[in-house]
Picture 1 (spheres, rainbow, N blue to C red):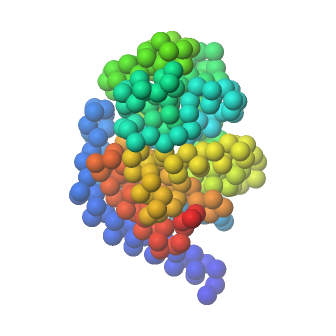
Picture 2: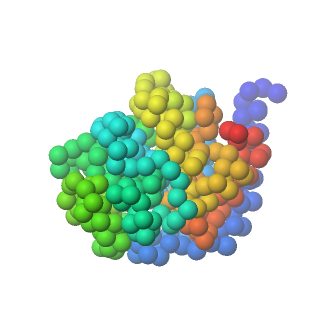
Length: 314
C-alpha cells in the first residue's frame, strides 16, 4: 500500500473511533465552579494527532477553541525549571503522586513545611508559577505567552480574558492555598498578583492541533517538529512526561497508565494533552467530565487510540 494510502486509512480509522467515543459525552457533566466554563457544549468532542511527518490531522469539532486549565501546569513546570532551575523548583515542590484531590488543603497541612507533593496539584502549580521568570505579573504573563506560542507554532495563541476574570473572581480556594504557602515560606511573592498570572495561565486558549503540537514536542525530547530546534531541554521534557504519567490525570493517573500507557495531562475544561515518546502528539477536547474531573469521552478516546495503534509506553 502506498504511503499516502496508508495515511488515508489511518485518518479513516481515527475518525471512526472519535465518532464512536462521542456517545460518552452524554455520561459526563460540565464543570460549573468556574462560571465561564458553564457555556461549553457538553456534546462537543474534538481530537487532533500531530504525526512524525509534521502533519496535524484533526477530527470531530476540531475548530472549537478551549482553555487549557490544568493542562497549563505542564507548560508552566517546564518554563519554571528553565527559568529558575531544577534545584530551586524542587526545593519548594515535591515529586510524589498524591491520593488526595488536586485542590486539597488538608494534604498540604499534613506535609512537612507544607511543601506541595507535586507540581500537578493546585498548591504545587501555584508555587511553580511563582518561579516563572519576570519581575512583574505582566512580564510573567508575557513570558508564558512567548513560550506557549513557540510550543504551538501559533503566534495568535493568547488567554481568554473572560475565563481568566471568571476564575479570578471565584479563586478563593486557590487564594487560601496561596496564603498558606506564603505563610510557610514556600511562596515568596504577593498572592494577588500571583493569582492574576495563574488564572491567565489556566485560561490560555487554543485548538486541538495546537495542543497536539505541544504533546509532540515533549514526546520528541523538546525539539521543534519543523526545525529540530531545542525548545525545551531534554531533561526537562523527560521530567514533564514522567509527571504526566504519575500525576497528570488527577486520581485517575494510575488507572490510565495501565489502560492507555500514554503520558497525559487533563484540565477541567475537558482538554487532554497526550505525548507519545518518539511518536504522536495528541490533543483532545470534550468538556463533559467524569467523577475524577477528567473528560469522560476524552479518557475513553485515549484508551481506544492506545489499544488500536499500540501506543502504550509500557
